[in-house]
Image (spheres, rainbow, N blue to C red):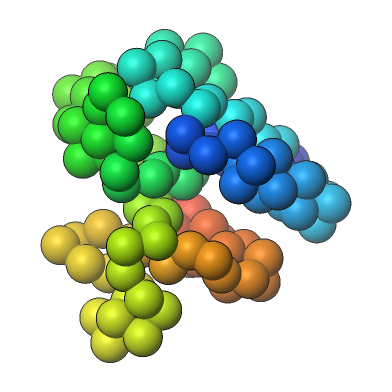
Length: 127
């Protein structure tokens, strides 16, 4: 089975390393990290992920601005984006069935099982 390519964009280095280690330990994922949102577009173009995990609040460029760049790029416009944030609770996400403003959302901190389930759900929407 081909590994799913996941790009994690978050300015918290500890968080991105933890996500990378856990997803790669699950065995089905190839994970690339970008901690600088200003470099996110170039990293995504080079990596062409199957799904993008994206923090909302970051210095220099916030998540919605990064998504705008992706949606205006022919190589990335159809790649699903999952917003990850500590600014919303799991209960708030659950109340919206995992979507806020048309985008998949996950509250930090979450479990690796929740993350994998969300990734797989977004990838299945493409198939």
